[in-house]
Image (cartoon, rainbow, N blue to C red):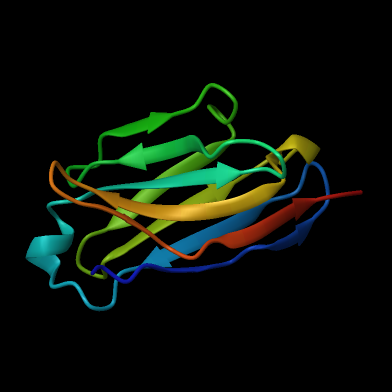
Length: 118
């Protein structure tokens, strides 16, 4: 079982910024590098949806809803993946989950709450 620990959620005003971090303390670096890392979110009453993903060689993908506002990055030596959220909107509110995926495994963190409110 892969342990993913998220941090950085909180309350932010519309137009503000927030940085989420996810670390995988129990993985050795070579194993961490095998995973495509990602952030997903779930708003109340809605299904979980993709926010952004990044491969070990830093190829990124974003949902249309966050493209141009959010930036995903990973540090393979530290086994972390961050999500920089700029110009946040009320509809960015939700629980944000870190994900580690390869062809055989799919792991999730416990989630961190982001609330965008004026």
